[in-house]
Image 1 (tube, rainbow over the protein chains, first blue to last red):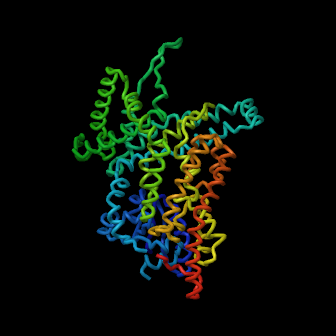
Image 2 (cartoon, each protein chain N blue to C red):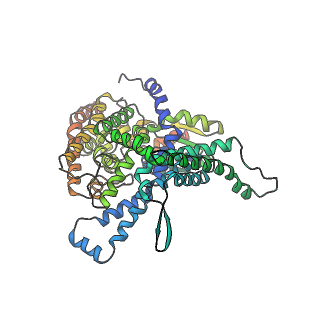
Image 3 (cartoon, helix red, strand yellow):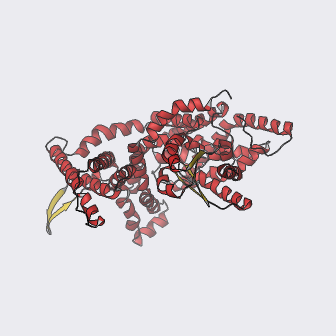
Length: 99
Length: 435
């Protein structure tokens, strides 16, 4: 099972997207574990993350997170702004899992 | 739209990273944030103690409840520096991947070392006590400095491996207990010397020096309308380039504004006139209505006035969050980011809100805010009530309408364009970018 972690400033808006992504996962029948947290707290969840998605508002931190976690085999990406804004859980999930 | 996202972001990025990823600023912000749960309880109980209804006041006084309602403030907000110094050192040390608890402890003890201690002889003998004067908002800058210095020093000493080495076979818990010993001796010796040094000067204590030569001037500057407008301008310009601007400017605003709010809250609890107009509470209650950019106005327009499916759906999707001040759907779904048209009201509305709210406070249309610290996500209007006055709520409603007014022409432009695209292509609910 893939573990996906979403991060943004406070973990508020990403948590809205997580709800939508879970709905999409149920619909598509894929098993994933998705959580949303504040970017400052990511360190303690790093071991439980296969795919790290950054909210576009913290996209400027991509370099930092890529440098730190990509060598450990984690996939690190920024969520597309429009998908994020429209809270398109299905598309974000599909992109993350490369379905 | 003629903007090259990546090149602009590449240029802005180093500056933003320097501020936002600065471990010291980050430690201050997260240190103060960690203390919030206790502070919020303190401010809520102060509100309960001060509801201006005579029958209620008579009841809580005669039932003996009032002193208990006033107590949390005395032990939370009025002691904020004690909590802050611990958590700032704790968070800084954790950022360096070291044991935060010992650093927190050492910084708390260091802070108490340099705080003046009083003695009084009474009938029961000599009583030693710590006056709370420097433990509240007045001591916060010292708390920040000591939290950072001790946290950094602790990491430095551990990195130099100046620790007592236990022979192999000693249980790890035992060696850990000794690990803090050398840093403890070094750090506490330094602060005893600092205390001795300042007692020899006319300042008497480090507190007095920092307070009068650093905290007062910086807060005086930070508490002005001009500084607030600059903070808002920078934060929203960054947002327009797709960077969470509040996250960046907050690290600078928090150390300045938290003491201002706290001073108000303490005065409010004591029934005295409130000293400050601007603080974090002011920003949350009046400026960021609907989140960064005060987007509640355009959000309402989208939800109820949009002709295009695209904005109607977005507006309704975003409204519940928007009321609670969470507006990423609007910012990225509209989008506001890299959209030169919407950049105008997005930057303008918060500044107009700040000027109107400041003026209304100066002219006594609304009372000064008691500086109640509210958790993120408290809905607009409710947040006004929690600051203790119906007039504050009334001003919030006025500001919502002003937001609608400022955003209206820009909204019409966007909506018309989206509506035309939808009727031209015949498709309804697209998530296509207009950019």
